[in-house]
Image (cartoon, rainbow, N blue to C red):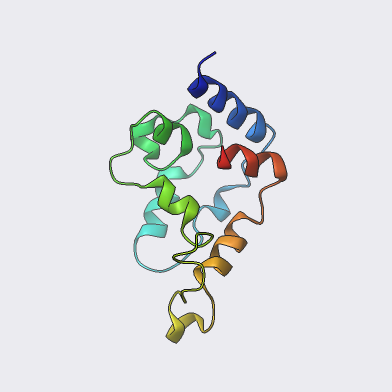
Length: 121
């Protein structure tokens, strides 16, 4: 099995038991028009494994296959925990002392050890 195939198998295994939480939590924000677009596009699509890369444009397999055109997955997975952005404040006028590390810690806190290891791989 190739390294890429092994990595995909590790990711599938890590996330196989994760259930779609429901349409109500598709968007993490109410700012701008992007959250509404995300909700419209993903509504009712309960199994992310059945969606093609041109639809997703932001997920691990599409990135591993070199199919992403506009999204930099490495940035989204490392901005905050890395040393260059870790202590930078997001927007002090709006979020006070919240740093990019605080944001990343919150974002990744819902992952279990196996899921975190798969993403890190």
